[in-house]
Each structure stands twice: as structure tokens, then as C-alpha cells.
Image (cartoon, rainbow, N blue to C red):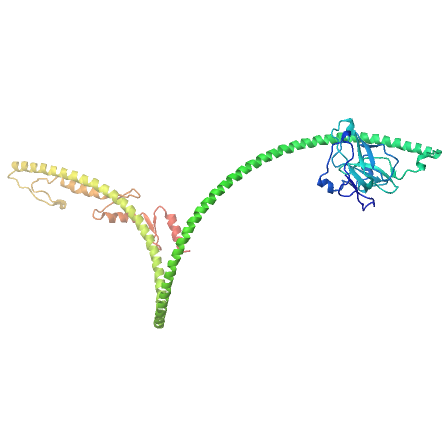
Length: 485
């Protein structure tokens, strides 16, 4: 496509935004027919502010460029693509006034066509046709420039003019000065050719560097693909976790819905209760009115009771003091009760031990009584035997030592002293259940003797009546000392 527009930076005419002339190059020459899209139609060609020093003029070579073109006719531009250059879709050829600085200073342009097969020889030879309507109308010098889609110039033609043909152009007159000028121009062209060769070598080196960079970028791309694959796997796992959490949330939502229904039933119940309470409140209001009437009567009585209230307050203070004292006494009594409970447990234990001892003594007593009965029977037989042998003798009676003797025995009962002295000896010896020591019992009050013995084994606080074992004397003294603080 092509066209003309006014460039504000250079004053040249630039192509319009919409195309008016399609590509006129031959399909048989190896070009692929191309139709511009809407995006390509409405946009300007890619340009840049790159200076001439950074451009590469040797990658595209313009062929058969005339010294001048007749105004009013179409101009065909022939160019050749070198083997190191790869054309792209948005490359373009512009007509620039000689002396331009940047690619933004084009007068008009045409989009290039991409060859079908870049390796064929015909694909290297390309052409574009500029319509006469868009060409310059002045006689200034212009040149063709090939600009890639990055806005970098890849080739430039020799200068030419747009002017009509006249006789001076047909008649060729060569002077010595012109010959020298042509020779000088040829030298400059040779020098430029050498520079282009050097530039070609530099471009080849840049191409190799770019291929190395491309290889590195491809390796980075593979690394990024691997990372992307891992990330996709991670996202898949994360998605499964999210789906599981979503399922759990749905279950929780169902539970909350069921609980909400239960709460709705509960709200209905509470509303019914509230209605009942409203009725009760009305009853209470009626009761309050009744109470208000009673309050009036009570106010009258209050005046009478106010006098007695002062006395009751004083009496109450005394009662509070008494209650406080009673609480203290109750606390002391509780402590004593606890101590008595502990003592009761000890006494119960001792009582069980005494019962065991008593049972043993009872069995011994029964054995002794049986033995005594046996001895009495034996004694009776002996008395009857003695009475038969000594009928004429009298048996003297005496109360020596306060002991009564049987009148039927000459020397008294030899077992009476043993019987009278053996029983008290068994009942008079007791063993303490705490200290495991023996103590003497008077035989009349066993509990009293045991209590007296226990009092010798304990220490009583003279202030709070707390009892301590005799072996905890240090603790007892510390306890008494605390009362003095």
C-alpha cells in the first residue's frame, strides 16, 4: 500500500493512513500476494530516531536506479536481498530527500512483499511500484531506503530527481572537469564498496553473536518451560486442595443450614415464650399497682419503724461482731474437730487393737477358768480323801497376809495366790499403738490410762489448741513463735 502525508518534522509529504494502490510486483517473480489487515492499514510504518551511523546499508541493494524520473509516471523500484538478510512482514521502502537524518523523515512509502521461498534465486530479486500520484513534484534529489520493522535502514539507493526530459539530457557533452568528477565519484564508490564489505563482515560477526544469543535464549526458554511445567503441576495440586477445601466448605454450609433451621425453630419457641412473658408482664404490672398501694401504707408504717431501725442497726452491729467472733470460734472449733477426728481415727485404731488384745485375754481367761475348775475338782477329791484319814484332827484357821484359806485344807489352797496374782498381771500391761512401748494399766479405766499415756506423746499449742506429735518439737516451737509475730 502507499500514500502521502505531511510530515511535521521535515515538511515532506507522507503517506496517508489508508491505502490507495495495492502492490504491483509480479507474482511470478516469487512474491506472495498479501492483503493488509485493518491494524496494518491504519498505522504508520515503523520508524525510529536511529542516526545514520547505526544503519546497515549493505543488506539490501537497489538495482537499475535512474538518475531522474519523469513526473506523472509510475516509478518501479528494483532491489536485491542479500543472503544474510531476512525480510519481515512490516518492512517497507520509503522515498527520502537527500540529507535526511532519521527514518521519520520519509516522503512516501510502500510495504514490501514477503517472498514465498527465500532460498530461491527469484526471491532475492524484488520490486515495488510507486504510483505517480504519491511521488514528489519538485526537482530535489531523493533516494530509495529499505527500512525494517524495527525502524532501522537496511539499504539505500543512489540519489535521483523527478524532472521532465529535455534536450540537454539527450545531448551528452563530456568535459574534462566532468571526467575528473566522474573519476572522483568512482573512487568514492569504490571506497563506499570497501566500507560495505567491511560492514558485511561486521554484520556476519553480529549474526554469529546473535545466533549464540539465540541459542542461549532457547536454553533459557527450555528452562522456563520446565519451570512452567512444574508450576502447572503445583497449580494442579493447589487446585485439588482448593476443590477439597471447597467440598469441606460445602459440607460446613450444609451443617450451618441445618443449624440455621434448628435456630429458626428455637426462635419460634423463644417468641412463644416472649408472648407468655408479655402476659406475665401485664400481670406483674397489675401487681405493681397493687404493690404501689401497699407501698403507701408501708410508708406510714416506715415512719414508725424508722425509730426502731436505728436501735436495730446498733443491735445489728453487735450481732455482726458476735457473728464474727462466732465465725472465729467456729473456725477454731473446726480445727479442733479435725484434730478430734484425727484423734478419733487413732483411737478407733487403738480400740480395734484393744479388742484384739481383749479377745486374746478372754480366750486366756476361759482357758484359766477351765484349768481352775479342773483344779477345784481335784481339790475336792483331795479334801474328801483327807477328811477320811484325819477325822479327829482340827484344822486351824488363820488370815495371814489378809488371805482367806479354805477350812478343808491344812496348808491352804496352793493355787489361790497364783490365780489372784496372774490375772492382774495380764490386764495391767498395755502396748501403745503409736510409740509401741508398754505402759502400766490400773485395771479399772483402760481408756483413761491410754489417754494419759497419749498426752505424754503430744504437744498442745496454748493459743490455738493445735496438737503436734512429741517428735515434731521444732515444728511446735515454730508454730508458737508465729503467734507472737
